[in-house]
Amino acid sequence: MKTPDVSFAKQQALLRCMFDAAIASAQPALCIPAHLPDPQSLGKGRLIVIGAGKASAAMARAVEDHWPAPLSGLVVTRYGYAVPCERIEIVEAAHPVPDAAGEVAAQRMLQLVQGLTADDLVLCLISGGGSSLLPLPLPGLSLEHKQDLNRALLKSGATISEMNCVRRHLSAIKGGRLAAACHPARVLTLLISDVPGDDPMDIASGPTVADPTTCEDALAVIRRYNIDVPAQVMNVLQSGRGESIKPGDPRLAGTEVRMIATPQMALEAAAAVAESAGYTAYILGDALEGEARDVGKVLAGMALQVAGRSQPFEAPCVLLSGGETTVTLRGNGRGGRNVEWLLATGIALNGHPRIHAMAGDTDGVDGQEEIAGACLAPDSLDRAWALGLRPRDSLANNDGHGFFQALGDSVITGPTLTNVNDFRAILIDAPTEN
Image (cartoon, rainbow, N blue to C red; front, side, top):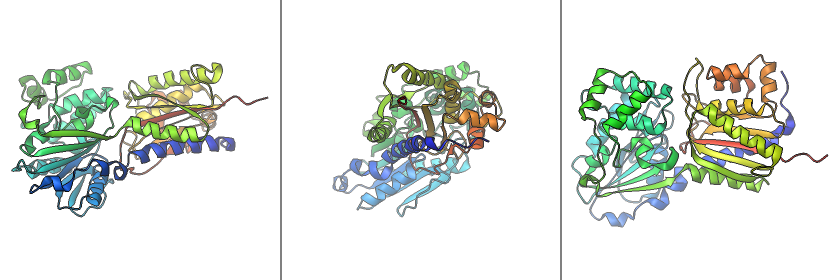
């Protein structure tokens, strides 16, 4: 096996520093305090804290640390993402395929907000992953129906917006239903966005915001991707029983939504790190979507144009992007949209000596693996061939994780306690003077 070129260590370390800066910029302890209301404004009312998502426990802890008055509540986070709290109960549940723990927690959450008054304030802490963590099916549906549908949606190639459209119309808590249950209390929702475009109704499937989409829209997604669903699911959608809370509903009149951390903010933090190291940073977009391997080819082509022709930018520079690509599973690999993007990028770059790259999910989990992503160096393909790996075969098998693990180039962060979607960086060095 070829030993990695030690001259690449500087670039790889810089890429990791940029990724770490993106994650740090979205930490709840940094983002939450400025958005908390004045405790005096509650008067005789109570503060009830609820929420769901991979960052929700860390968000709850930040609330406790900066709220001097009484409070109580319940939030749901992913297994392994709990943070100790004293006044807010933390429940762990499964993601991305929901489990019974999440279902019970969702039921308890709805019960918790019953009987509130107009003097009370519900503080809802929502982040990515909340959709799977609050799996409360409508009457006539079961948790098993939700689990099977989630698996099918994850494999279908549907966008996150399309998946959440279906989820909202089969849920007893999403699509504005949680906020409606809080009425007549006021509801302040603090969001950490993990979706392209930062649309609140797509973050955790919008439990506290109005939903303009319809059951017919959900049916269109199922037909578009030829998803096989049980008769019970079709009945809920075709009958209209799954309609969500629509804009203008009076039960949502006392709601407010604030975006406290976004993919764009994270990319700007990474760009500042690149600039301090002498690389001009260009943010190509915070909401790129499409098949991961196709996006990889396109961005690799742009990087090659920069390296070869100084167009549209001059090296040294870094091309940054965020968003959420998709992977249509065709092989028996472990998926992971970031490693799929990175492998496709590497194949297109074909070992260009001045181009490095990195991709990772800011929540620390790429696909269903406890691996955030991976790094790519100019010698990655050579090292893979020396190990007997065939890069194109790995890509065809959706086995990016296996490919980069074999090279020792996986990026493992552990639970990051936040989630602002995917991070992609392509670093292009200037030509060496002869």
